[in-house]
Length: 106
Image 1: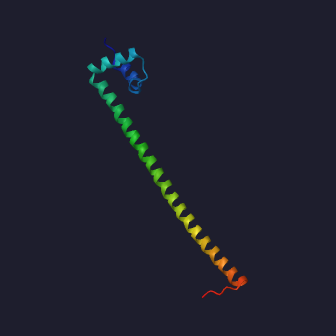
Image 2: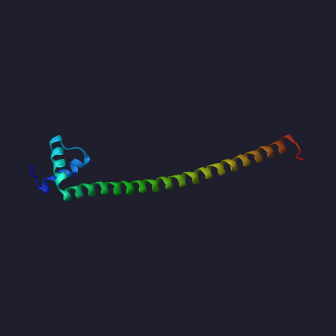
């Protein structure tokens, strides 16, 4: 069966994604065995997909790193606030005890 490259190139995206019918798949595979140009086209689709996935992964990694940095900054601020307010509370309690109870501190 001699099918033009143009028809196969129209079917290649469907074949590549695995959504074409069995007859179309068989036809494309038969053509790919004989046509170097269409095999190259299919290989280019595979390579393009890999490059696209890598770019998406890099973008996601950058977003995760930014979120991680902001989370760490927020956590450090929260810890420092907790320490500060704990110290202030202890000082206030000691002042109240000193003033109202009359316990002398060393």
